[in-house]
Length: 78
Image 1 (tube, rainbow, N blue to C red):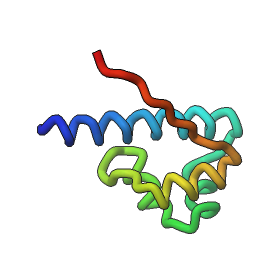
Image 2 (spheres, helix red, strand yellow):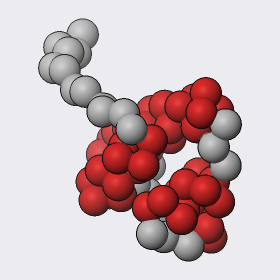
Image 3 (spheres, rainbow, N blue to C red):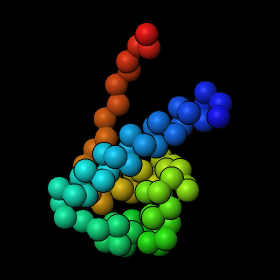
């Protein structure tokens, strides 16, 4: 796996973990999330099991569906 692929996988895992935590806090299922974002439950399942990668459009829909905002900050690598 290339360094770029590792970076993409790490970002995906970070966001999926954050989404799972928020869904658990709200008692939301993947089925409910899929309806709120307008994608099939199969697609959402693939996002959660890593068979598909998040894109910015989907991430924006998810944050709206959950009523949250993702924030980013620059961190220097060591």
